[in-house]
Length: 241
Ligand code: UDP
Image (cartoon, rainbow, N blue to C red; front, side, top):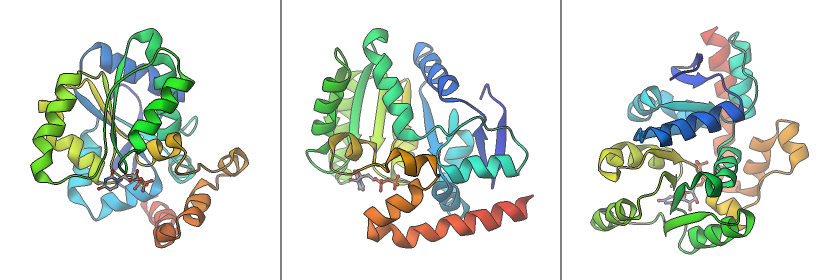
């Protein structure tokens, strides 16, 4: 990775601004690099503590951005200059915004049936001229996989967005990256849900108050248990130091 990284509980997170991250992704596209990019929040880093495969994937990813207030806090706590948060949703919007001019082709893979198509319509409304070359929902079995891979291959996207949730999206990308042949694949969690309007993102004031995690916990009570990852993360990072 061409940036300084900080080791947060084993995960090498790049010290990057949004601009750095966008430019680096575009560089990988120009190089037809065939790489995975991840956006790491505290929950993902905690998942990686007990999921060796996920940890391995994050350690070899071409770029891991600091998604979430927890990750930025940890970097600062460990003495690294971390200029800002580079959240998956925001990174995707920047890339989509620049895609028409750059002639970048994008594929939306994941989320519930119908959602990726809605997200595509929304992308076309927001970013006139954008070329979303394919969509596929994220609910499938092993027998469907060859057809999914074939569809992505023949659509020839420059950017593959995989919205299957953590760690499924990271593992799926890792397993299929060479045969997919895409320059860049990014795991984007709930991004398509938010674009399609089926899920809300935290209001800006909450994002600025570093409370997006709380908002997500409130909106999806199923996730409330997952909120415990954050205090555990803080304690572990304090020990790392
Ligand atoms: N999802 C999917 N296939 C699955 C499980 C989940 O496509 O087998 C989708 C789900 O519909 C949602 C996204 O993955 O759009 C997960 O979003 P979430 O915000 O939970 O992501 P995380 O925070 O886990 O990255």
